[in-house]
Image (cartoon, rainbow, N blue to C red; front, side, top):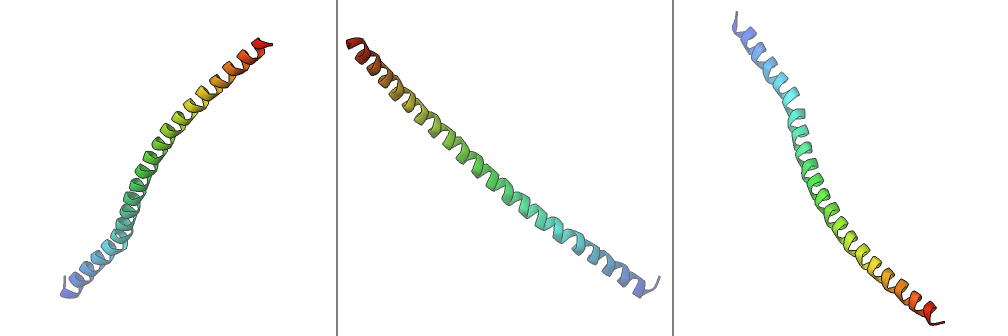
Length: 77
């Protein structure tokens, strides 16, 4: 083997590493960002569900009060 063959092989290996390594690094970065976004979104959904359940409880209590008042009013006649 002469020196040019060794240099060519090293250049080919570096080129291969760069052509495969760069997209893999970009993909890893994108996956990390997506995971952080998904975690944040899941936390927001959890908070919204909790708030929604509390609001529905309040609606149900109000509805029960209205139904009781209607029953009392109808019973007065």
